[in-house]
Image (tube, rainbow, N blue to C red; front, side, top):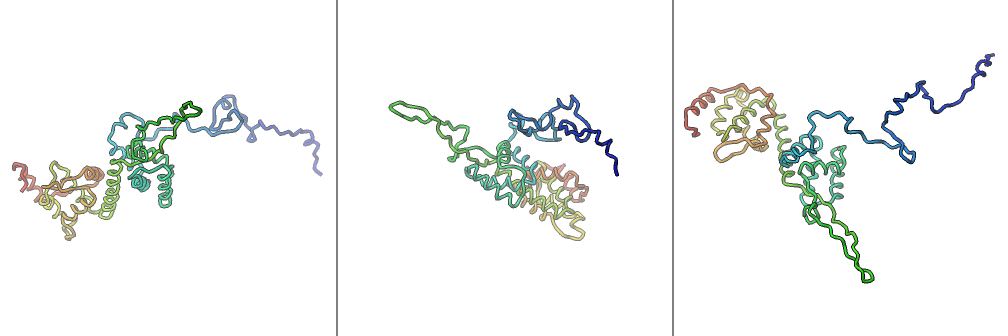
Length: 304
């Protein structure tokens, strides 16, 4: 039989203040605020994170500065599209829905439908706020008037011969997309097309880079100059697969180059695309291109 005399000598009592793991809190730890704090009614509420204690994100865009607000709306909107690439289809859908003034409820319904095809962690209010800050959305009335210019006058009520002022109901807040938003949408669609083109013809990126480089020069470049520079490139000449027209047509469909009446010239979007090809090696220079360069240096600048 087990002898329990020694155990009976102990008096067990539950102390809720003791740490079950065997360690108590120091005075310094007790004074350190945690993520939870009791309110006046004794409940425990979660405190939002302190911005001063959150590490800064590298290359994050500060949208609450005068410098950011002074930048063109199209530039801010394009940057938003670039930062939220995975949410681009939702942003485009919201902008399309706001071609005419729409209520917040209508935008909410639009986002819910878009969520069925694309997950987003952002609320509709978050997305509207980001679009507004970027200059892609504006608050307006149902009539399309700027909401910040609306003056809400109190109603006058007469009772027993006395006039009283009572608060009137302000108009509903509606959202409308700006011209910068539509321009950014077009650029986003072309971006997707150009990325697909570059992925499909990845082995030909050096030629695309060469064409964009020539088209980015002042005044652009002619088809004859492009042909002299590209058509003999071993990537397409051995065996013959394409001529330079193939690359111009592809870039034109993606709005990366355009005809200015006398030459092919890179668009602003095309110059950005050229920057994205900075790591692509393009070392080929044809004999004809070298000769054209020598002739151009001695000519009066007229292209024949």
